[in-house]
Image 1 (cartoon, one colour):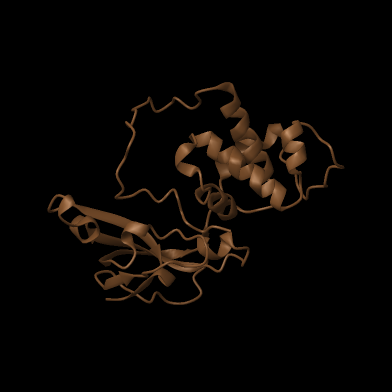
Image 2 (cartoon, rainbow, N blue to C red):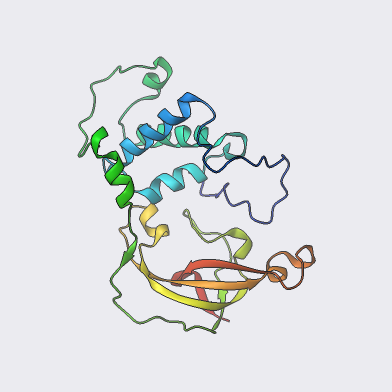
Length: 219
Protein backbone atom coordinates (compact mmCIF):
# COMPACT_ATOMS: atom_id res chain seq x y z
CA UNK A 1 0.00 0.00 0.00
CA UNK A 2 1.23 3.49 -0.85
CA UNK A 3 1.28 6.11 1.89
CA UNK A 4 2.38 9.04 -0.23
CA UNK A 5 0.02 11.95 0.25
CA UNK A 6 -0.70 13.10 -3.29
CA UNK A 7 -2.96 15.86 -1.97
CA UNK A 8 0.04 17.57 -0.36
CA UNK A 9 0.38 20.27 -3.03
CA UNK A 10 1.75 23.19 -1.00
CA UNK A 11 4.80 24.72 -2.66
CA UNK A 12 4.47 22.68 -5.85
CA UNK A 13 4.07 24.09 -9.33
CA UNK A 14 0.52 24.24 -10.65
CA UNK A 15 0.30 23.01 -14.24
CA UNK A 16 -3.36 23.89 -14.81
CA UNK A 17 -5.27 27.12 -14.52
CA UNK A 18 -7.15 27.71 -11.26
CA UNK A 19 -10.75 28.54 -12.12
CA UNK A 20 -12.56 30.82 -9.69
CA UNK A 21 -16.14 29.68 -9.06
CA UNK A 22 -19.00 31.15 -7.00
CA UNK A 23 -19.06 30.10 -3.37
CA UNK A 24 -22.44 28.37 -3.71
CA UNK A 25 -21.51 26.44 -6.88
CA UNK A 26 -21.50 22.89 -5.50
CA UNK A 27 -21.77 20.37 -8.33
CA UNK A 28 -20.71 20.24 -11.98
CA UNK A 29 -22.90 17.24 -12.79
CA UNK A 30 -25.83 15.37 -11.25
CA UNK A 31 -23.70 12.33 -10.41
CA UNK A 32 -21.51 14.43 -8.12
CA UNK A 33 -24.41 15.02 -5.75
CA UNK A 34 -25.00 11.26 -5.64
CA UNK A 35 -21.29 10.71 -5.00
CA UNK A 36 -21.50 13.00 -1.98
CA UNK A 37 -24.66 11.28 -0.74
CA UNK A 38 -23.37 7.71 -0.98
CA UNK A 39 -20.04 8.68 0.64
CA UNK A 40 -21.83 10.32 3.57
CA UNK A 41 -24.21 7.37 3.89
CA UNK A 42 -21.36 4.84 4.03
CA UNK A 43 -19.36 6.97 6.45
CA UNK A 44 -22.36 7.05 8.78
CA UNK A 45 -22.39 3.24 8.99
CA UNK A 46 -19.28 3.35 11.18
CA UNK A 47 -17.42 0.92 8.91
CA UNK A 48 -14.53 3.41 8.81
CA UNK A 49 -13.76 6.81 10.31
CA UNK A 50 -13.22 10.19 8.67
CA UNK A 51 -9.42 9.92 8.83
CA UNK A 52 -9.47 6.52 7.13
CA UNK A 53 -11.60 7.98 4.33
CA UNK A 54 -9.35 11.01 4.01
CA UNK A 55 -6.28 8.77 3.82
CA UNK A 56 -7.97 6.62 1.17
CA UNK A 57 -8.59 9.69 -0.97
CA UNK A 58 -5.25 11.40 -0.54
CA UNK A 59 -3.16 8.30 -1.25
CA UNK A 60 -4.80 7.49 -4.59
CA UNK A 61 -1.91 7.12 -7.07
CA UNK A 62 -3.90 8.89 -9.82
CA UNK A 63 -5.07 11.67 -7.47
CA UNK A 64 -3.77 14.51 -9.65
CA UNK A 65 -5.64 13.26 -12.73
CA UNK A 66 -9.05 12.97 -11.06
CA UNK A 67 -11.70 15.58 -10.37
CA UNK A 68 -12.86 16.23 -6.80
CA UNK A 69 -15.77 13.79 -6.75
CA UNK A 70 -13.94 11.25 -8.91
CA UNK A 71 -11.46 11.13 -6.03
CA UNK A 72 -14.30 10.54 -3.56
CA UNK A 73 -15.78 7.70 -5.61
CA UNK A 74 -12.42 6.00 -6.32
CA UNK A 75 -11.55 6.03 -2.61
CA UNK A 76 -15.01 4.79 -1.65
CA UNK A 77 -14.75 1.90 -4.08
CA UNK A 78 -11.36 0.91 -2.66
CA UNK A 79 -12.60 1.01 0.94
CA UNK A 80 -15.68 -1.07 0.09
CA UNK A 81 -13.59 -3.71 -1.69
CA UNK A 82 -10.93 -3.80 1.05
CA UNK A 83 -13.63 -4.50 3.64
CA UNK A 84 -15.36 -7.10 1.45
CA UNK A 85 -18.56 -5.03 1.28
CA UNK A 86 -18.57 -5.43 -2.49
CA UNK A 87 -16.36 -6.98 -5.15
CA UNK A 88 -14.60 -5.67 -8.22
CA UNK A 89 -16.97 -7.86 -10.26
CA UNK A 90 -19.92 -5.99 -8.80
CA UNK A 91 -18.31 -2.66 -9.60
CA UNK A 92 -17.78 -3.78 -13.19
CA UNK A 93 -21.34 -5.09 -13.47
CA UNK A 94 -22.89 -2.05 -11.77
CA UNK A 95 -25.23 -4.23 -9.72
CA UNK A 96 -25.36 -6.54 -6.71
CA UNK A 97 -23.89 -9.98 -7.43
CA UNK A 98 -23.10 -11.37 -3.99
CA UNK A 99 -25.21 -11.46 -0.83
CA UNK A 100 -25.10 -8.00 0.80
CA UNK A 101 -23.11 -7.71 4.03
CA UNK A 102 -25.07 -6.34 7.03
CA UNK A 103 -23.93 -2.89 8.20
CA UNK A 104 -23.78 -1.75 11.84
CA UNK A 105 -25.70 1.52 11.28
CA UNK A 106 -27.64 3.35 8.61
CA UNK A 107 -28.32 7.02 7.94
CA UNK A 108 -31.96 7.81 7.21
CA UNK A 109 -32.63 10.62 4.74
CA UNK A 110 -34.70 12.52 7.32
CA UNK A 111 -31.74 12.58 9.71
CA UNK A 112 -29.17 14.00 7.26
CA UNK A 113 -29.63 17.73 8.12
CA UNK A 114 -29.22 17.13 11.85
CA UNK A 115 -26.22 14.85 11.38
CA UNK A 116 -24.44 17.33 9.12
CA UNK A 117 -25.23 20.24 11.48
CA UNK A 118 -23.84 18.29 14.44
CA UNK A 119 -20.60 17.41 12.66
CA UNK A 120 -17.88 15.31 14.27
CA UNK A 121 -16.04 17.30 16.95
CA UNK A 122 -12.47 16.10 17.45
CA UNK A 123 -11.54 17.83 20.73
CA UNK A 124 -11.14 15.54 23.73
CA UNK A 125 -10.54 16.18 27.47
CA UNK A 126 -6.96 17.14 28.33
CA UNK A 127 -5.16 14.31 30.14
CA UNK A 128 -1.69 15.88 30.44
CA UNK A 129 -0.09 19.33 30.29
CA UNK A 130 1.14 20.82 27.04
CA UNK A 131 4.78 20.12 26.22
CA UNK A 132 5.25 23.50 24.51
CA UNK A 133 4.20 27.06 25.32
CA UNK A 134 3.41 30.14 23.24
CA UNK A 135 6.65 31.59 21.87
CA UNK A 136 8.62 28.31 21.95
CA UNK A 137 10.66 27.53 18.87
CA UNK A 138 10.00 24.04 17.51
CA UNK A 139 11.12 21.88 14.62
CA UNK A 140 8.74 19.61 12.80
CA UNK A 141 9.37 15.94 12.19
CA UNK A 142 11.47 15.25 9.09
CA UNK A 143 11.54 12.23 6.82
CA UNK A 144 8.91 9.84 5.59
CA UNK A 145 6.65 7.76 7.82
CA UNK A 146 5.10 4.34 7.03
CA UNK A 147 1.55 5.66 7.29
CA UNK A 148 -0.71 8.49 6.17
CA UNK A 149 0.09 11.76 7.93
CA UNK A 150 -1.45 15.22 8.18
CA UNK A 151 1.90 17.00 8.52
CA UNK A 152 2.30 18.98 5.27
CA UNK A 153 5.36 17.88 3.33
CA UNK A 154 6.46 21.49 2.78
CA UNK A 155 6.61 22.01 6.56
CA UNK A 156 8.50 18.80 7.42
CA UNK A 157 11.86 19.39 9.07
CA UNK A 158 11.26 23.17 9.35
CA UNK A 159 11.58 25.50 12.32
CA UNK A 160 8.71 27.67 13.50
CA UNK A 161 7.24 29.35 16.57
CA UNK A 162 4.30 28.25 18.70
CA UNK A 163 1.56 30.85 18.32
CA UNK A 164 -1.32 29.08 20.04
CA UNK A 165 -1.66 26.11 22.38
CA UNK A 166 -4.90 24.33 21.52
CA UNK A 167 -6.71 21.47 23.20
CA UNK A 168 -6.22 17.75 22.77
CA UNK A 169 -7.71 16.41 19.55
CA UNK A 170 -8.11 13.03 17.88
CA UNK A 171 -4.71 12.24 16.36
CA UNK A 172 -5.46 11.73 12.67
CA UNK A 173 -2.30 9.70 11.98
CA UNK A 174 -3.31 7.02 14.50
CA UNK A 175 -7.03 7.23 13.74
CA UNK A 176 -6.45 6.60 10.03
CA UNK A 177 -4.57 3.39 10.87
CA UNK A 178 -7.35 2.02 13.06
CA UNK A 179 -5.27 2.53 16.21
CA UNK A 180 -7.93 4.46 18.11
CA UNK A 181 -8.30 8.17 18.69
CA UNK A 182 -5.05 8.57 20.68
CA UNK A 183 -5.75 12.27 21.45
CA UNK A 184 -2.75 14.57 21.22
CA UNK A 185 -2.19 18.25 21.97
CA UNK A 186 -2.60 20.50 18.96
CA UNK A 187 -0.61 23.70 18.35
CA UNK A 188 -0.67 26.51 15.82
CA UNK A 189 2.91 26.86 14.55
CA UNK A 190 3.94 29.92 12.52
CA UNK A 191 6.71 29.67 9.92
CA UNK A 192 8.40 32.34 7.89
CA UNK A 193 7.42 31.64 4.29
CA UNK A 194 11.07 31.77 3.23
CA UNK A 195 11.88 29.07 5.79
CA UNK A 196 9.51 26.84 3.82
CA UNK A 197 10.07 27.88 0.21
CA UNK A 198 13.29 29.89 0.20
CA UNK A 199 13.72 32.92 -2.03
CA UNK A 200 10.58 32.03 -3.99
CA UNK A 201 8.54 33.43 -1.09
CA UNK A 202 8.17 37.16 -0.54
CA UNK A 203 9.86 38.53 2.59
CA UNK A 204 7.60 39.26 5.53
CA UNK A 205 5.11 36.51 4.72
CA UNK A 206 4.18 33.83 7.25
CA UNK A 207 2.37 30.50 7.14
CA UNK A 208 0.40 28.99 10.03
CA UNK A 209 0.08 25.22 10.43
CA UNK A 210 -1.95 23.39 13.08
CA UNK A 211 0.35 20.54 14.15
CA UNK A 212 -0.06 17.75 16.69
CA UNK A 213 2.53 17.38 19.44
CA UNK A 214 4.09 14.16 18.02
CA UNK A 215 5.06 16.20 14.94
CA UNK A 216 7.18 18.59 17.03
CA UNK A 217 10.46 18.72 18.93
CA UNK A 218 12.29 21.65 20.57
CA UNK A 219 14.33 23.66 18.08
